[in-house]
Length: 308
Image (cartoon, rainbow, N blue to C red; front, side, top):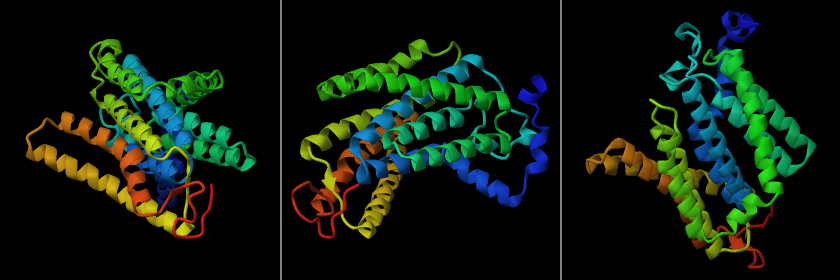
């Protein structure tokens, strides 16, 4: 059993240039740049409230994963097996964050959509992401199985919270209450984190959520009704331009922080908070100002309207 859980020699004969490209693609679905693209686009062009719930789920799942990693401090496979080692350098292996977040995120989306194709798509993506971590040699079987199990638990707990109305009641609180809860949770990480480990990196997720929730509150106040969306080609332009603006904001804030002599950690926190605010408030406001989206009943937003 120990050999099954920890031996990685079996993965070497499976590798090829084509397979490596495929599994690098799957593993990208578990890194921050993907979430910074996927979550805002979903918010702009699909369902604001669904993707806010998803942002909360991903945040909670990632925090649990980071805490357990630093508690158990289980090393990753030997460097000789790793094809993705530059992106995981110095971090622990158990449980796999890619596996845990993938199970929670994609199956939650499937549950929200409630269509057979959504469940099939989620299963394919989750399987691909989980196997990619083995193929790339950055997790062993034990890491991935633990991540899958914890992802199922995270999914179940979140489903109960939503079903029982806990998330809904929280979202109906005044915006200042949301900010207070998240702001209190940030220093709270240093109180609950395993001894000897630093949660500074994982805290960035809470700063992003802080900006996201603040922006979502402002966005719903400015446009209470879900927007009518334009033709598909205009949506492509919205997504492309919006994401370009998001990463331009990140780069400009990083440069401004460096020029001002701010500590890199502080600059990073300010940047991710601003990016969350941009995703849920500034970009939607710009789309409305440009006439690309309008509230329901306001007429055609400059192109054949379509409703997702």
